Length: 178
Image (cartoon, rainbow, N blue to C red; front, side, top):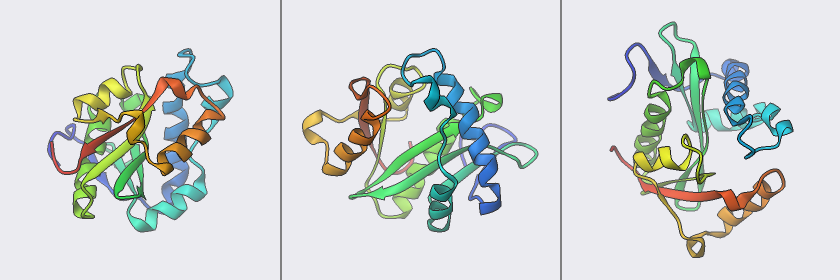
């Protein structure tokens, strides 16, 4: 895979690695500490094991592996309407700022293309540097509110229970390589 940091690889994941993915998610969530974007109690929340269990057989989880083959980050996707939705991208801070997040997202673009989907969509914080500004560098563009679909509004309603959704946005990008 192009632009993958030297020594790292991206592959599918086995169910026995779910505890590693949860640990990565918890470590990555600490990046939000002190931002005011998430309540402190949400920093100890993570993608539930059963979500991973359901997503793995359908090829909706990719993991970035360290030089030792250990999980260092992951992406979780789902099919929503006519798009591949990027539910979660988490990179352990020990492996951060090396391009793993971007490489994982590029793998999602390829996966969407392989699935015959034209776009990848996500929801993110509008102003945090490692959120919407980062996704813009990968070609994502913010969707105007009038273009949000019912499933997007459902996601937003669930998010509203734990965060200020006025600070968030939905973004979309065409599938395929950058």
